[in-house]
Image 1 (spheres, rainbow, N blue to C red):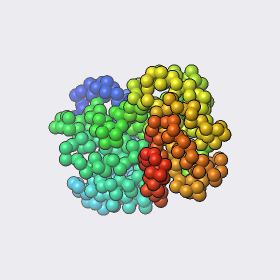
Image 2 (cartoon, rainbow, N blue to C red; image 1 turned 180 degrees about the vertical axis):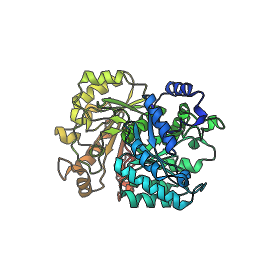
Image 3 (cartoon, helix red, strand yellow; image 1 turned 135 degrees about the vertical axis):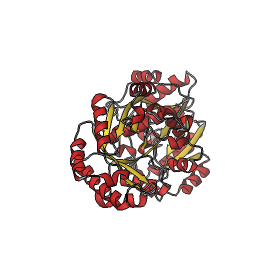
Image 4 (cartoon, rainbow, N blue to C red; image 1 turned 90 degrees about the vertical axis):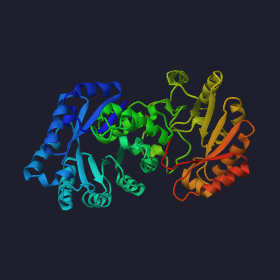
Length: 456
């Protein structure tokens, strides 16, 4: 499923073949399209389209180019439209210092008035900002406070601009320009945007991707952006589609997020197994405190899956090169199930990795590692603390302050039974990664840093 978060299908470029455009979008996997208003008449048109087609939604607003043409009565009508049930946001509104088609003071005036509407109707805002990020951000902070629900549309700013929008709570949307040969700067900026905060858009009929450059843009061309982002983020096209669609659903309330927690979930070319939500740590940065979702997958289990349910989930999954025991809990808490599943996978000659906090020996008061010989190809032990004191403060293990030393013993012993052993640590603020690299060197195992707030 794909969601085009910013389109202008009400524009005259689509008058003759809108039905064909919508059919091609559906065939390309585009489930929802949000049409965006640029003035009062355009806002009325996009609402009419949303009323006509179930899968179309609308945002209403007055573009900065139209700032000198706004009448007081327009605000009254805009407010009426904003309360329509299929209007999911206010926009596109903001500032445009690139073309300066309206005086900047006029742009600021209507921007502020419409931000007040955003507050009144409590719907997300769609920001247009072109070469005006400093003033745009300043106005948003003054009028809206420190946290905003919305999206910076057709983003073309710097890494620092992106950081500031993200810190305010914005999602960031990028379309066709990400595919242009001369867009290296934009691609570098995109790499710094968490995938969980990215939306896809076409801004059609404008800005067709490179593969259709010079033609009218349309929602079906979103697939070219998906391919580009897959390369940027090192994810599959299915990952990009799923995650960005989940983001749009979360922001705009389109449809419903996945309600059932997954047992098996694909990321890239690996299959992850979520066999328990229980854990023997309570890490301060744990994603489970923030969301039920990882890379667009709901991992909050209603119950611990049976052996049969896990095998069924594996068999129903798409192709994968590796299976990883890694969900919203500590896999070794279900050691017998883990061993049964690992044996089943090894019987199919599939590589198996175990992501663990290294508490297995403490959980069972014995060494579990000999039992994993021949079943696990790689074990990744999350350390997240370079000293006993730091580990206890960060991870809050249920086994107390001696846990750190026991985890180190687990890692050292694992080398006897597991072909590859690695230590991992999250690069959270003030966490000196070089300390973990030294621990890994002393223990004779590999080290891999995990990016803070980047799960999966």
